[in-house]
Length: 274
Image: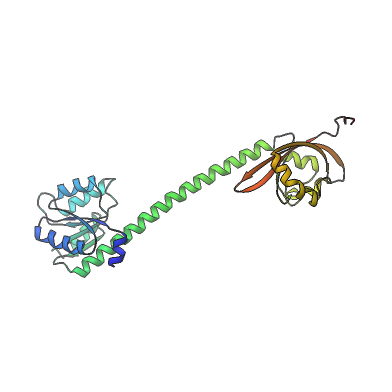
């Protein structure tokens, strides 16, 4: 247990109007590696908890001016201290006293005179629960952020798709293996294939000038140039050849290289004589 506590030095606030009880509890808990603050009345306890919220509070019930029940109610009414676990300590051992302690927000109850083993067990159990609650809260916050980020990314993707699908020119994204990984609607309309069909195809299937060997040889050259414009031939699903002007741009995403090809049908454009 000592090794475990050394990895997490919990800060505990002990509240008791009897100095002997304060000294006894402080000595017990300090021996176990906890950091202890001690106060002798409810008002000071509230000010101390507000100034620097502890990980756990050991709170005596029978105190003058403001008893432990009232202190706990004030703690639970404050946003800054409402989540701090409160363990009541008291010589009162009646069922109704314990019921009231839980009703005002206490998480546990220790009866005087103290048993060291019981104090250690209840304190450590409630600190463990508190740590797990904090971890769960942090995980939920991270999860909500991830969900929000994913929703933004999905929206950006849909907007990009919406925008690119209104391009008159065909758009292709092609990886180093010549695999087509993205096409817009114009590419489907021009070639006569569905989007699903094109995403299973390679450049070799639609451009006879780029065989597998040619693509491998020219990938690095095209990558080095970064941007390149040239003419070629694309073959449609029904077997027609169309002249195209290709504007090729190299880009990298997540460590992977791609060519973004903007393709314009220039079949009706007069060919220049060489």
